[in-house]
Every structure is written in structure tokens, then in C-alpha cells.
View (cartoon, rainbow, N blue to C red):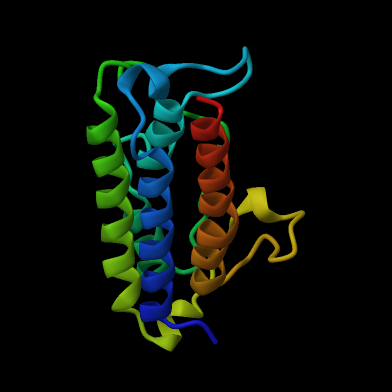
Length: 160
């Protein structure tokens, strides 16, 4: 069984990996696209910061407050348009803030809350299915989504 504090610890670790992956990059390097279909480092960080209207912690909070809320996830959105001039340091700080807030939220949840379910249509064809628990949803966010982007950032940083 997963616990809130262990999820927070995992999130903190991923944030440190993100910060390490982008440390030492210049603004120019972080803004450079490697190919037509690839994101720059700054685009990845913008994606991880979210769209600014609904943060990830509030989406997870819906699972605690509502009975099986539908959570719509929109993969592939970088939210970078209009953020091109934001410095790398500020984007990195935004990612850290976003996931620190989520970690603090998760750390305060009990077993009953972590076992509440959500409907996530995007996950229907995945091993966790369309109706994951809050703990499963947070675990997927950490172990798949964030992990994939950490690796993407490492790859982009090494291509400099």
C-alpha cells in the first residue's frame, strides 16, 4: 500500500532529478528545439508547470471531495505559447512549486482518501484502467509521466 508521505518523497526525488537535468544549461540551449516535432527543454518545463488555470493538486483534491470525478488529461500540450520569454530558472522554479504543492497535499492523505477512485478515460487502455484510485493516479503521474519527462530532459540536455 502506498502512503501519502511516500508519494511526497517520490515527487521530491523527481523534482531534484528535473533540476539536475537542466542545471548548467544556458537560456539559448534550453530554448533550442532539436527537431520539428520535438520540444525544447523550456517547453518540457512549461508542460510540467501546467496550464496555469488548474493545478495538479486541485485535480487530485477533486478525487477526495467528489464521488468518482472525471479527470480529463490532455497529453501533448506544452502550454509554452506566451511563455517563451520566461527564464529557464523561473520555469524550473514553477515546476518545483507545482510538485511541492502536490507533494504536500498527498502527504496529508490517509489510506481511505488514497483509495478513493476517479474516472480517467485516457487511462482506460492502461494497466491501471479507467477507474484508478487516487494513490494509483499519483503513482502513475510520478512513475510514468514525470519519469518520462525526466529522461526527456536528460536527453535534451546531453545533446548540447
